[in-house]
Length: 250
Ligand SMILES: C[S@@+](CC[C@H](N)C(=O)[O-])C[C@H]1O[C@@H](n2cnc3c(N)ncnc32)[C@H](O)[C@@H]1O
Image (tube, rainbow, N blue to C red; front, side, top):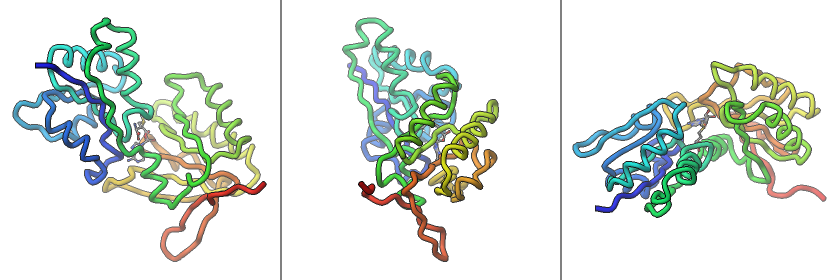
């Protein structure tokens, strides 16, 4: 029997946001591989083996999944959101490139999911309606100086910015530094969205002007979206609508 490997995104949390394509792959799988909380989102059933591992072992996990597929198993590597956004798809391809030649001939598919950035933006309105960038604020896999450089250039280019991994418990100081930098670079009161645990029962959405944004408003379950200089707020009795107009002036 020929095995295959699907690298699938489970979306931001709600079952309603798992794509039918991903649901079908999970139904055909013999093995699920991934970080403990993501594997826990897959219902156990007879004939399905769950391989949950710690977040720090991405490349080992990718190699394990590839070895299972090479042995004829039908393997789904699960990520939250989209698997190509700060997640397992790149780790699998790094393992393919470094691994045995035979892994290059495996049937490997990337099944997209709804990334947290898009789910968070939709909850607030349309803050990413004009040009924007996405930055992973964790300095686990890159130097902090590079994060700062990208923040500076994003402000200069007047992008709206979506921040993943804003504030880990182990290194909370990074987000404080990022906010201080943004507050010094942007003289305006552009909106900042703190969207936590979006599409889960714990969801909270908070919108504050940049000068009032504080590091403790974010944790590792939060997406932070900082508007561009053009991003607007429509106040209303319900939660405000945050949007960035489609056009930028000459
Ligand atoms: C390692 S990244 C993985 C991103 C994922 N692949 C995606 O496409 O959404 C984890 C970060 O995504 C964000 N995130 C994931 N799920 C979220 C949710 N339901 N609500 C808000 N942010 C979320 C948080 O910033 C978290 O620190």
